[in-house]
Image 1 (tube, rainbow, N blue to C red):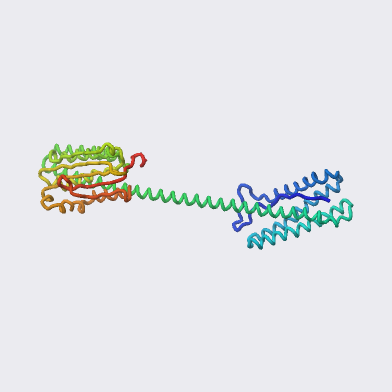
Image 2 (image 1 turned 45 degrees about the vertical axis):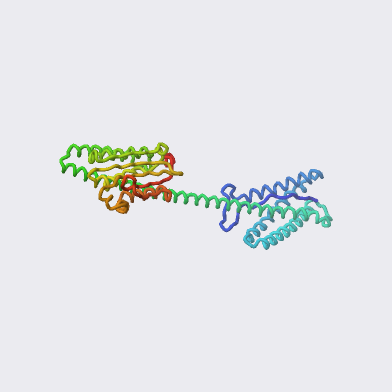
Length: 391
């Protein structure tokens, strides 16, 4: 009598609805099938033939034949499992177990008949149970391994699908971030480029007025300083933010131009807290605000006036103020006349609001009030951010 140990399966290809094949393992059914049943023959020989000194050719032939028959009988078992793979679980378990038991009984009968035919031994049917139970063990183990490998592959497939889905989601999120960033950059660039034509138009009007007044030297000086300012603007093109100290340097270039026109009538005072001088602000933030003060305050006052630019730290942010002394007409009409300039200020303040909104969202704000100098005070608040964080 011979006994058996579990054979290796099986069909590692997953007959799932997508008919997926593991790209790392491929279809390993036949390699595993051959190796499993060959291993069964070797184990049977080592555990039964050697201990009982069964070295005759008939015993070796039976050993090989029973493995070959087992391999052939598991083929219809595999086909059966493929057909019922998508059935409800409990129904599939019952049918799978019944099929394994039926074929294991058939294998046990075939093994016993062939053994008696090859060896000449007789009267072994009373020991049929000793042949049946190892056969059941082999086929049930084969079925369990078959399903185990298939479920493992399904799990790997689901994991791969999930990873691909997560990767696709990340790519879409990154594309969205890039698109939003490009949109924001385009908006900021557009807002930034609105400033130069607006400023250039006003400056060229001033040059024209100087030429008409035969102040040729002043016109030449203003054009030279305009050239320096525009060169600085081109050098800083593409920078959406600069340090506050750099922004003040750019403002000085602009004021050099206006000092040609107003001479002693224009007084400018800077009061910048060193603690915020290296923090980030939108480039060319101050120039349109100071230009607004020059247009509505200094330019309308025969005596000229004063502009004060100050900056200090507040909570987790920066507050920047641009103040002016106003003009006699607005002063005679009271606070409401002073604040009218905010609503009618045009490009400068609208541009400032939009740029702060694009860069800082609700964390950036522009407001106005009456200045202690007598004119308008523009208040800008924004987060305290290092310039390098925008790099």
